[in-house]
Image 1 (cartoon, each protein chain N blue to C red):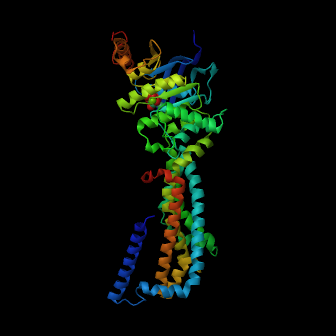
Image 2 (cartoon, rainbow over the protein chains, first blue to last red; image 1 turned 180 degrees about the horizontal axis):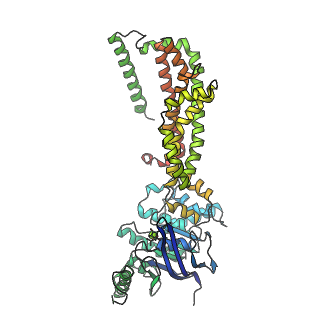
Image 3 (cartoon, chains in turn brown, purple; image 1 turned 135 degrees about the horizontal axis):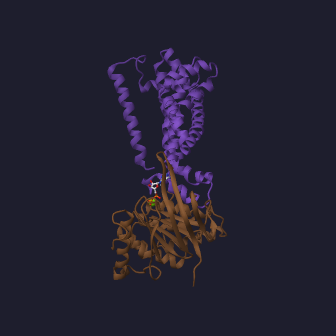
Length: 266
Length: 253
Ligand SMILES: Nc1ncnc2c1ncn2[C@@H]1O[C@H](COP(=O)(O)OP(=O)(O)O)[C@@H](O)[C@H]1O
Ligand SMILES: [Mg+2]
């Protein structure tokens, strides 16, 4: 079965205008994500990963090259994406349920109010937040906030889920919990995903393809396909295959950081 | 409210009044030097009609000035909060304006609009109190984390939707913090003008007439009423804050 390409980024070049002149951030970025695929993007910090997510969301239009979703060239936000960031940015004056429902107040939806609420409750239960619907964000732990933020990103069934280092601020155990929750969510609520991360283990655990970006200005430096559809249990991270993939990626990151020349074997 | 929250302040007030009475009695001060609490009831009995009329004048003009300050301060804060250029342009002006002691502006305004007593008074109450509101709203808006905007913008939300759904409610705690300062300032502004204006009205003018006639019990009686009005206004703001920004209070979670 060949999968239709959902996100297609070709020859993208972009520079930010800053006080000290243009800052080239992306230069020769290529990315292609099939429908239902889950791509992890890794790269040195400050290389342009968040900029890439803003391109896909239509929040930023590149100076050169094109970003297509479903074949349509993105020139403005199109309400078909869901986003979650390292900062969960929940609204303190709303309950968790009301927070999750926020996108439905903005995007056109066929769901009635009751149906929307039912869907929100279902998503919250899926990520293990049953019983927290009427709590305020300040009553939740960091990991729980992040789970609520994920539900908000999914409530309107977006075509593309964009996750920009969503687990970056969490402790190691909470992070591993959330990885497993992500697999559960993906099984129940299929989405096409782009995950920005600086955790290589996370990238091979969750994604079916890992893209390594070069240092700024970023171009696509290396693409690693993960066999199967992502690793399903934490045990998989301790197999020789996983160790091999991690080695390859670590080497590529070092190349991207300019610490070793590309030719050196890992 | 628990019984404790009632009787502790009341006890403190009674002790304060007793100490005041005792001080005047021990020092043997005559009433034209310092009034004692026991001098006040006769003053209220004699002038109660004036207190009602003047108290109302002071109250409505303070509230009117404050409402203007809220509207203007919020609008100014929004302009400065959303536009960096406007912030850079207006901030020095605003700071300079605020640095001028308002006591020096009062006589100028009193002369400028001589005879327009209500207008004068409302204007000063407004001028003295909009600054904290403008600053808090602009800071609240300009420090909104970009992710909040991005979440809504990526869904195609307009700027005004972002303002109503996120920016405004998120700024409310700072806004009410500033309003508590502003309400006290507006009250000071009203009284300054009432005292300084010739043929003034309001409690400030009543205070001034007490001064002219060396009626110390009246002056102290006015002070007490001013304190009560000030407390009343302050707690109205506190009640509004509880209603509209109660979520920001972590102590009742
Ligand atoms: N709006 C902006 N204006 C100017 N420079 C920016 C802007 N956003 C990001 N940058 C700069 O562009 C570079 C890439 O940013 P970003 O995409 O956030 O990197 P990453 O997410 O990979 O850490 C960084 O050096 C950052 O400082
Ligand atoms: Mg980033």
